[in-house]
Amino acid sequence: MELRQIEAFLAVAEELHFGRAASRLRMAQSPLSQTIKKLEKSLGAELFERNTRAVSLTTAGLSFLPHARKILEELDLARRAATADTGTVYGRLAIGFSGALNHTTLPPLTRALRQRYPGLDLTLSGGLLTQDALGHLHNGSMDLAFIGLPVDAPSLATRRIAVEPLGATVPVDHPLAGRSTIALRELAADGFVTMPEAQGSTLREAILSACTAAGFRTRVAQEVSDPYTALSLVAGGVGVSLMPESVAGIMPGGTVFIPLSDNAPRLESGIAWNPALVSPALRLALQVAEEVLPTPPA
Image 1 (cartoon, helix red, strand yellow):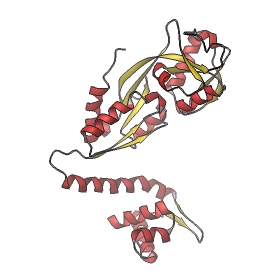
Image 2 (tube, rainbow, N blue to C red):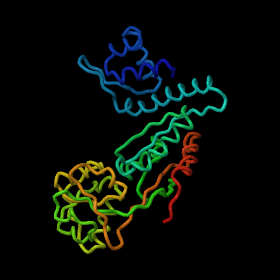
Image 3 (cartoon, rainbow, N blue to C red):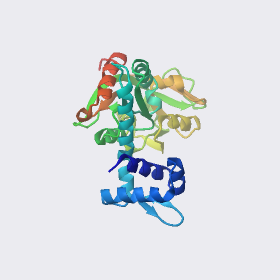
Image 4 (cartoon, helix red, strand yellow):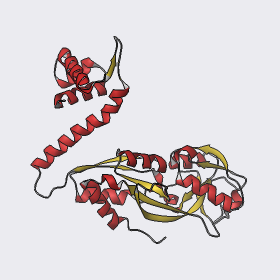
């Protein structure tokens, strides 16, 4: 396998058109086709399905694609590291987070990493709920993830970074919207906007457990993957929800955050990583996280 074959594969995979890929590589279409055929022969699998109208990736091509990208990314890093000043840190770090729930914890870490290690390439992926993030950590497609705790993932390492009380989020025209605090049982008749059960959301589990402890069964009005979208649905009158108190500062128009009285349930959040796949970049990130996101009391 040659580097030019991988570059040719990526060009075709991204363009899904041999003519455009050849133009991008500044070569004729016939040599490009021969290069791809040689790569397929060396791998023992067809990477593209071709017909007169379209080009598409085969299952083998889809499987090969992330590895091909990683090869070129690592080569780029190697070139940059070879010409960098002594002591300059280079590497790639993929970080996953849910979105609104991490608006106070993600920025301090990424800001510190960019300031201290400008040669470190950060890739941030939002909209990930806990179980999805754990899957990415297991297969190595992600280095670090912001998650809800606790989790059942013995092969992964976790550390708590925040413990927050949950509060009620209701539409601005809700009968309880003007109250300074409410008891959770006062929302027993309302439908709740939650995260999908299949995606293993820790927040969803916390909401259901809190409602059960308050003496009623949660009636789910709508399920959405993104917490901020959940707040938008609350604003639209679809239902109510529970969110950590840090969300109070970023509530969309038309919603109200109300603290819960009487032992408000708490949500623990943390970071997770795969100890079997600790790169130099991840090791640095964990060290910085210890400083900017210290472990709070339980």
